[in-house]
Length: 391
Image 1 (tube, helix red, strand yellow):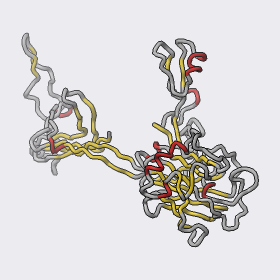
Image 2: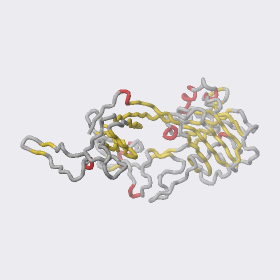
Image 3: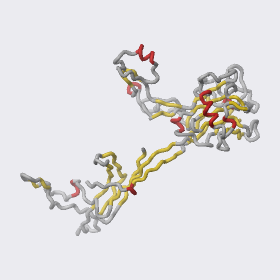
């Protein structure tokens, strides 16, 4: 086996930045991601074992029957280690030492809508998801005054606010700026559309053209954190009588009701005329190593494969009291193709490269790159094999 060391110009380290697109459709308290429903598996009806519209972290328990699913577990012992979802009181009272504390897989996440009604006179002292964003929103105020938690444009602590949370396992490191697109439909007809036209986080109503509220800012986007805040409270119903967006009597569509039914506890059958669409692009960064392995001319033309030598020769090694040597006079099989059955073509040492093994500095095998089709290597041919590893 031939060992060759990578030179400095044979290794390239890169970061690939990609922007996958996600399309959420919300209808009748169900979410559909990229127009996909539940996928039927060979063993279960829902192969992914997650609700529609969710993203599975690590994709565990795919198409596994109930009795064969993997799960996390930990034994209660003197280290007092447990899961974060187990309270201290439950840990002390519900489990004895030696008991197995279990969790469940898969872990999944999807978008979540939360509505904060203006009927609450003040939410400044309440520890909720909206108030926890106060400092973050004020931080982005230099980009737009609409980010301010409280200003002449409104007080998010007391006004109607529609908060849509996007989990990071969907968008990655950040939502790509300017890619948020929100659409509000009634009976399949588009009645309102929001976009960040200026890439400054302001969600401006851009459609339908000439509709009530066109050109107005209906909310803002926190791209790094993955939140959409909607405060637009004008009527975008275009004569639609309305639905039960907030309970009680039907109310006309507004941007503060966008996404009703997106994991907010709304029962199916409550919102049946309205539907919502949200598209965005995430940002993922993948570290890669590109490796160039060279097969120079005149090298790598010997093989230890038994088929490399002519069939029928003795393989018995030469042994003695102080030595062990293989027979050096074994003839190598000539596999050079000839146009005639006799005589044979001139002999050339020929091998076929089928894989490239990668070793660490201690010659421990850490990876194998296999070729789809072995390539012919003679002494007058040289190759460079390009391999890429995602970290």
